[in-house]
Length: 227
Figure 1 (cartoon, one colour):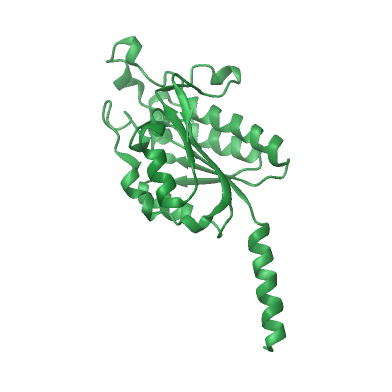
Figure 2: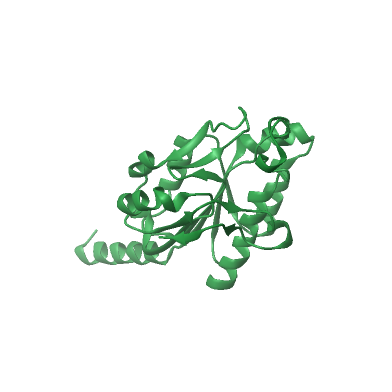
């Protein structure tokens, strides 16, 4: 290949990489009712299995309005929790989620562990992640993909702020907008995310609630959103 040909190929590949944009939505799983029924009513979570799913589909609508009807959505969902809750409720939740993704022309990516999540996220092309949203349980130090699913009030799968350096910072667009819709992320994890990835992560200072997502309202914070 001649020098000119190499330059042409390199330029084509560079332009192709720059033109690719992803909108990544990450969805954690619900608790099991058998555990939550043992708690006092005010401390119970996820009476509706689809809190995080519905919030994610609402966000898809927002992204398409802001970035165009053809904006590519990569929807990453923690599969084991929905399999377990589906068995408990005798409902095909994973099939329903796959149907929702197909209806919305979103690329559905199931993951089964924290390591698999990082691997899948790191597989995105360089500079492609334009927006990133997390819906699920969380605390100030971690996204909890599972919470109260295998063990009452305990997470068995998470992305801790100590794990953030394992995420390739190169996958993010330099102006990427990232947000966690879980509780308390803005109290510690947001700062570590910015240090590890080079882009800000908006998070909650205080708890968030998904009480009205079934009525089409995005989760709200009882406190403030911070970056």
